[in-house]
Image 1 (cartoon, rainbow, N blue to C red):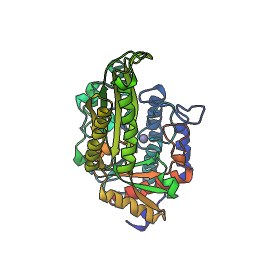
Image 2: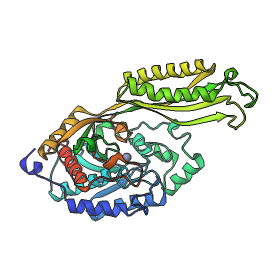
Image 3: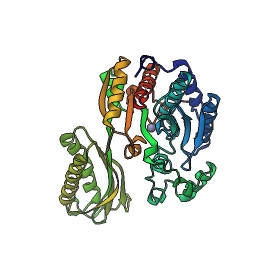
Image 4: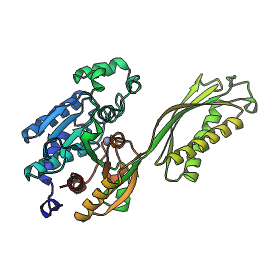
Length: 415
Ligand SMILES: [Zn+2]
């Protein structure tokens, strides 16, 4: 890279003003935002993005999956596109940084490159992916763009198909259009995403930048303990086959097993349903939702085996039958080595300390990683809070993250 490019920085004042404008759309009294996918505020934020980009002299487009794009043609004709982005949708009652920071930083990078009239080997595109948070169905935008969207992804959207269709209508999309957003991998030079960490490792270590090495894989199961319904007054405790007891023993064993044997992983029971579920009847069945995450397939396999044994032990102890229903899984996604190196070099140029870390949360980057070189940059989340109005990142950290995104993009776009 030439000297001029390595010295280039984003316009911190403009970046902040743009970020604040966006944060006002769907703003909540507690200082967060409420912009679930296809809500009024979300659609307004997307219109605002296109309008802001046009005013900055940039091209805009929307694809069949509703992904909103801002394009800067700074490469030769026919050059591939380096994508930079994240998402403008939020969970209900969210913070203002998750997703929004990455989109606004991407827009700021394009404005900076345009302003300095740089010619690169790739074009640059700032992209806002559709429904990252899965208000209807997770990653529908990035799955659509990468050609990985399958009919089963949209078979049972959260809240039902009717609600999903109404939402698509509001955005002038349809189930059919979602499938025409696919791009050829050859047209994509790579993907970079700036995001808040949503955990507390960077803050605790006092390190301003995290370079994501991989996004964890997730497996989910429904674990059913099957016992016998009995009278709660007349059946002695030692003669019961009480599904609630087996489920409870298992839930505690999940925590113990993961802490002891997989200390860098997590396992969660988020829901239990008892049947018949009344005060005066011994629980006949207990259905326990189990989800666990790890950054490697062999670790996921080992966790599946060990937690399966823990469920069998709990069932045996309380004389229950056991059924384990395999629900959903997503494999771990490795971030590209070269993208990681470009981010590390960017940190060195900017004199910023960094650490390598896996991401425990899912991101659009995991979909992109299957078709193009992909990298992710994390900035610290104060207190590790996210998906809450308490979510906060100190503004100098946001500026650092955007400058790292700029410098990493310039080196990946081979200036
Ligand atoms: Zn996010």
